Image (cartoon, rainbow, N blue to C red; front, side, top):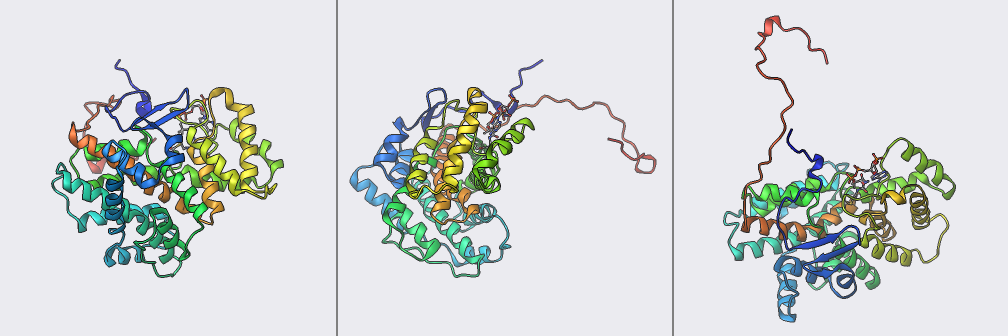
Length: 381
Ligand code: ACO
C-alpha cells in the first residue's frame, strides 16, 4: 500500500519564500514581515511590491510602481462589451474569471521568463482586476461602468468606481488593510491551482483565471459571502444556539470557522474583528457584528477545543457589508488582493519549474470485456 494523503494535507508541494504561516502560534509573515506590522504601516500596493520583489520598495520604486499601476487601470471596450453580454444574475467571480482569461488574448504573453514582460503582466493584472469587478457590478444593474481615476489611490479608486462617490478616507484605510490581509497565504487551494497551471508554462492571465475559479468555492474564498447569508439566516441572538447546535450535530460546516493550518484564531481575523467593531459604532444589538461575536462565543464553547475558530472570512464580509458593498462582490475583492500572492508564486514556479503531474491510486477494474451496443443491459448502480 502506498501512502495517500487526501487533499494533500501536510504534503509540501513546493519550496517558497513568499510567506510563512505557523498555525499553532497564529503567525503569518509575508517575505518575513508580520502581517500585523504590514496592516499598521503599509499600503496594499507597497505590500504587493514586497510580495512580488521580495523587499520593501524605496520611495522612488513605490512611486514608479504606483504610477505604472494607475496608468493601466483602464480596460478595453471589448472587455466591457464582454461583461455586458454576461447574464446579470451570473456570479461576479465567473465574470471576473472570464474577463481575466480574455485579457490574455489582448496581451499575448509568450516569454513567461522575461523579467520586463513579467513586470508588465503583474502591473496590468493588479491594475485591471478592480476595474473589471466594479464594471460588472454596475453594468448588471444597467448603469454605465465608471472610468478609473488616475489621481486616486488604489483602494480609493476602486470604491469610487463602484459608487461614483469619493469614499470617506477612514473607510479607504480599512478597505486597504483588508486587501493587505488577503494578499497572500502560502500553499492554499487557489495558489496551488494557479501553480499547477503555471507549471505547464501557461501565461499569467491563464494562471490567474485558474486561481480565480478555485477561490470561488464556499470552502475557500466563497466563505466570506456564505458567512453573511448565515448571519442573515440566524437573524437574532436567541436563534444562535439552536442554529449552530443543529449544524454541528448534522456535521455541517459553519462558514467562516476552521482552517487546515490554524488551530488558534486566524491572526487576520483578529485585525478584521477590530475594524468590524469600529464600524459597528452604535453597538446595535441586532447588527451582524453583534451576531457574529455571539456566534463566535457559542462556537468556542462547542468546538473551540478542536481548534475550530474564526478564519479570515468570518469578519471580512461584515466589514464590506457595513461599507455598503454587495455580498457577491466579497470574493472578487478577495481575488483583487490575492492576485499579488498568486503572481508571486507563479513567478517562483516559472523560475524553478517542474511540471505538476502527481500520481493516483487506481481502484477500478482491469480486463473488462467490450460489450457490443446491441447486447448491452441497462447499467445498475
Ligand atoms: N464547522 C463545523 N465543523 C468543522 C468546521 C466548521 N467550519 N471546520 C472543520 N470542522 C470539523 C469537521 O466536521 C471535522 O470534524 P470531525 O473530526 O468530527 O469529523 C473536523 O473539524 C476536521 O474538518 P475537515 O473539514 O476535515 O478539516 P479541514 O482541515 O479540511 O478544514 C476547512 C478546513 C475546509 C476550511 C473547514 O474548516 C471548512 O470547511 N470551514 C468552513 C468554510 C470556510 O470558512 N472556509 C474558508 C477557509 S479560509 C480561506 O480559504 C480563505
